[in-house]
Image (cartoon, rainbow, N blue to C red; front, side, top):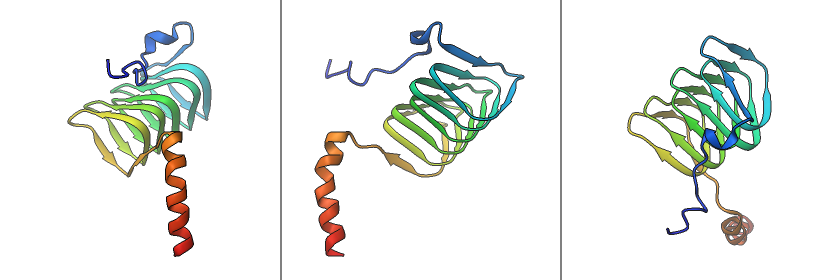
Length: 140
C-alpha cells in the first residue's frame, strides 16, 4: 500500500548464509567490508562498510568508527558517523556520537544523538535542486 515495497525495511533473516555475528565478548580492531548482514553484539574499533546489506548494532554492541551501509539498525553505542544509504532505525538504547546521513529514518523514544542529521535526497530530487543551488552560488 502507498508504495510500501519501495521503502521496505531490511531484516537480518533476508541474508541467511551471509550473516556475520560479532559475539558479545569479542573485540575486533580494523576495518570491515562485506555484503550481507553484520550483527554486532561485541566491540568493533574500525570502519564498517557494506555495499549491499544490513548492519545491526545490538544493545550490547559498540562501534568506534564510520558505519556505511544501505540499512543500519542501532540499539547500542556508536562513536562515529553513520551513513545509512537507504534506511536507518534507531531503537530505545541507541547512543550515537557522530553525524547521521540517511534517506529514511525511524527513531524510537529514548534514542540519543550527539551530532547532526543529514537527509540524503533521492537522485531525482538532487538533480532538481542542483540548478537552484548553482544559481545561488553564482549570485553570491
